[in-house]
Length: 412
Image 1 (cartoon, rainbow, N blue to C red):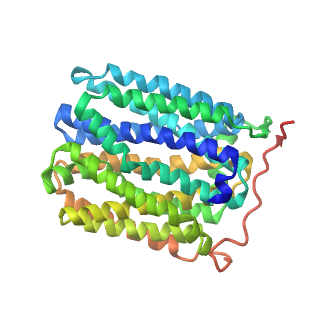
Image 2: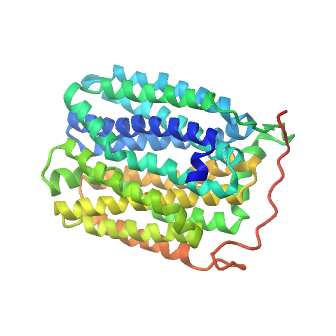
Image 3: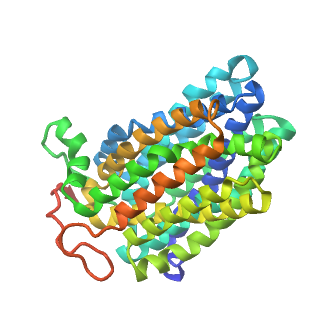
């Protein structure tokens, strides 16, 4: 971490992104709680996250954009556009609840663009041996700030309504844009590929298909996310039916999840260096399954422990997956490979969010948690199984395919 924090551009970018994450986390939860308060429906609240996930389905387009332009100006523009777009939530209210859904769809699309551009920019900005630490810091920010941001979002919502939450998120997007603008990175400028746009859009998924490590990661993600989306709806029922608390109490258990995420961020890179990216993800999936089982009794101390474990595990999954993508992909394809994996796993996740929103109305949430545990264990076992071909002791592939060549010219 010392080497990472000694890097000026890394400090600027990670600091700006961490502040932006505060607004994101506060808004994300607050919108679900707000819809629950306005409608009284856990299903309607869960559909807020469904709309966001539908926006991520534009990932093939956003990934191509991230590979065809310089990532630094793209991130500046995307953050400023998000700041303007999120202000549209100020128009929503009891009579316009529907307006939240299209805005969250757009929020998801911009998030997809920022994620693809960020994955590619970090690989250019930092040496390979610092990527694990950088991804861990980002995940600590994304998940660890749940210690304060859910309480901030839920608290502001309960105290003054949605307006301060929306303005907070818009302001943090502006700060993130400013941090990117201050970078001194010398970024390669992509040159025209000379191939048909369809071939460019599908280049990412084709590369994943012929790279065993990425292909196995993709299949694992699809299996797990068939049920992982239930987490967007089940907690509302856990709070109301299991713990018998008001919807805003969800902010407290999300904050505990953030504590676990901080521990996960500290441990992720050291564990990954001693094992592999794949091993880190597989272990994390087993922790997620354990957390699902611990949530079933709905005993508050156990629920808090389970949420901490869940926060740690989600950080490990994201750090391991993103680092694997960055280390196994040529720079000119990073945006599209990241987008291809995003879209391939977002489809089952989106379906599972919608399914969870429907099932929670007719099936006890404890049954859904048990099903989630079983399916996620299956995904972990599949990922941990030895892939075809040689592997080194750390589990890394030793016979990687020749990467697709994408012409770039160096910026002078």
